[in-house]
Image (cartoon, rainbow, N blue to C red):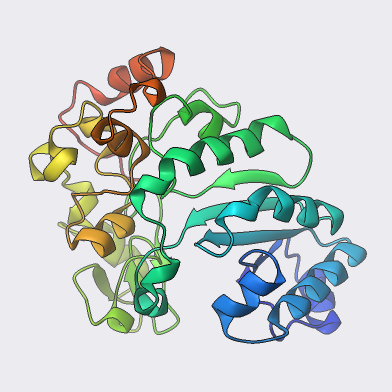
Length: 297
């Protein structure tokens, strides 16, 4: 369960434990000044911290989800220490995208070029300090280059990005019943409906999921649809253009994604950041052979 924590109370903690909830994640966007500025609600940070402390004290694991923006990007290490001191179990980091309210505040949105220092910083935070909270990067952080393993290695056989799973292994259901491949994808709030597959009030979820042609932007993926740098990239058939929402909201094209570490490194001539070793070979082996078919299920 994810909440902004504004109205969370000890009663919510008690009911969550009674219901068998195993973890609650709080949106917390950096140190107090950064979080309260982004949320436009003075006192929001204090409320979230109080909620986290209450959960931890009651034995309910608490996690934090943070979107990176211009106000908090340079204080990630210090912020993780704060989360550690409050007993947070895991921390997800994701890039802030120029959409919704943040689209009205472009000064907060990091440019793709910032990835050249930010990705190494996040990789170092994940690997240099293994203590809690465990750090996980979201699907719009990366991709490839010399830090890919450090970003995504969780001890599994595959430790690199293998494409957007929206509509293939992930599904999102909005509060009004709209079904999308991923909750981050746009819908009525953004004045768009091309990623909405239907509504649960009209059609059962099983039927929407199994409908021929559903989630075509991912299930019917073909490398020929990739545009710009993505269309010529050596990782095209395995990366598939990275995070669908990040690509769409930054270029208007789900298949052209400038928010890519490898892309920026190549465009900036930073060959020292490009790794042609084990990860590269494994990615090419994983991505070759089927022309881009995506498994469903």
